[in-house]
Amino acid sequence: MTNLLITQLRMSWGREVAMAALAWLLIPLFAVVGAAIWGGWASRNRTTGDVAELAGYARFRDAMEKAASGGSPGK
Image 1: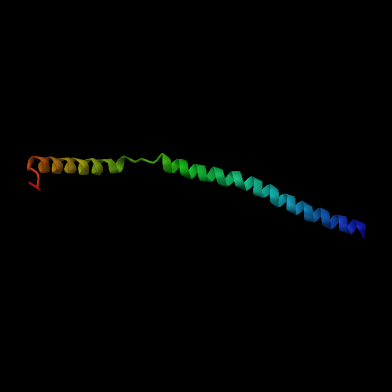
Image 2: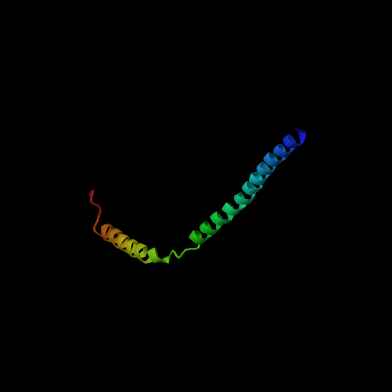
């Protein structure tokens, strides 16, 4: 009877240790996958929107120059 209890306890404890080890191995694995995804996102090519932004800024400057040369609307 004692051997049966010890065997059941050992099997239960072994499964618990295995799950704890699995959890401690999965945490760094998820961290590595997350870091790889973030690294890929952070190093993406961001120059595609620059041309449109610069053109918009040039239009804004032109509009401001025209408004300044035309006089103040409040006077």
